[in-house]
Length: 189
Image (tube, rainbow, N blue to C red; front, side):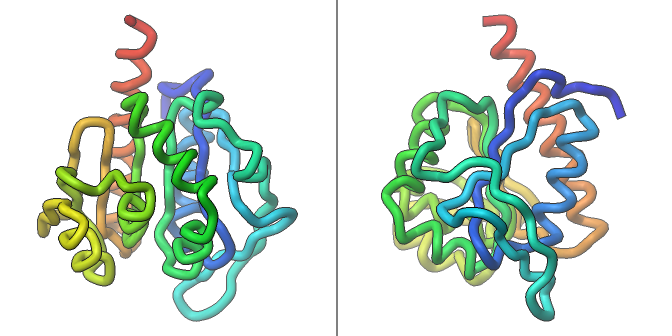
């Protein structure tokens, strides 16, 4: 894989209980593409993934959400996982961090039910998203258009309800292309 994201700073925003497969696959692909990846969380120290059956691996937090600035990052990834998303929605720092990416039209990739944080960040209205069934009602109630597709692209926002391995791999490739395209646009500006 080429280093298409060389020099790009990517934030992965999550908390305890994130979908471990979403995070691992995205993180590996981003690092292989040359991105500098930082795990941002309201939790400190180590956070634990959820592997679908129970608690999974622990991952070190690179920066506390309370001190993280969206201006320091070029792109944002939010893995799914209801436990993590519930935790993210307990602090206004989540809203501040996400809003920076949305306001500055920086690329954002949302996996599974992660699009539900758009409601908390007051960024769902008018957006087109593809999400896990569990997040559909709350997004529609907030004014988002939910499509029944494997992926939705809406400006700087990429979302997908994908939860299985083979489809996730395809989504990761799409995410890398999406991020690389935005990186080229930013460099040209």
